[in-house]
Length: 193
Image (tube, rainbow, N blue to C red; front, side, top):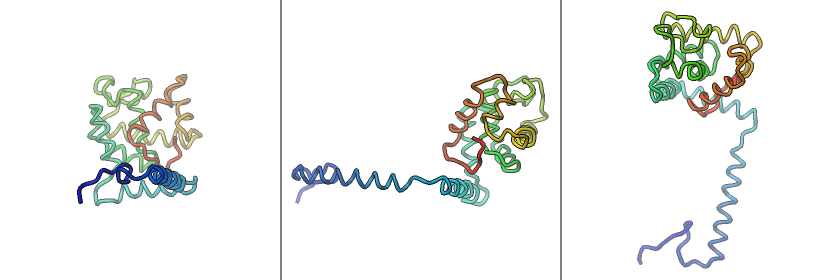
């Protein structure tokens, strides 16, 4: 018996009726599978929390978010790449999405590449007229301030943060959201977006 030719998993030469029927059933099964995979809002929140938990606990000492962020920043030749763990640790400490502060640095300074000399100010803090002691210092202060002076004071979304952080810009929030999606497209259990 020789090797046959298969199209859509059906041997070549099978009557067209059976081939079309096989295709129709394939499409129906794919549509049903896609429909069943749609999460309702409650399940979406549960899966987001589970996803964040899995990222942190998959291997001892390994945090998917750190590696994802480090890789992203490295691909942008950012001086912040070596501080990915600081971003994640401070985000966890202050209850922020780990992508928020790095995304702000993307909008304000091309991820720390365009800053006033020795200022460590990748965030446009005080219109760029503020100097931090170090990268870890800047990450901690910006993360903490976003929590206490923005989110806790009535700006729980990027759009509301934008009104206070970067007035009168109408594009700042959209740019931050763009970088958040580029760092990691998986949803997290935070309502910041």
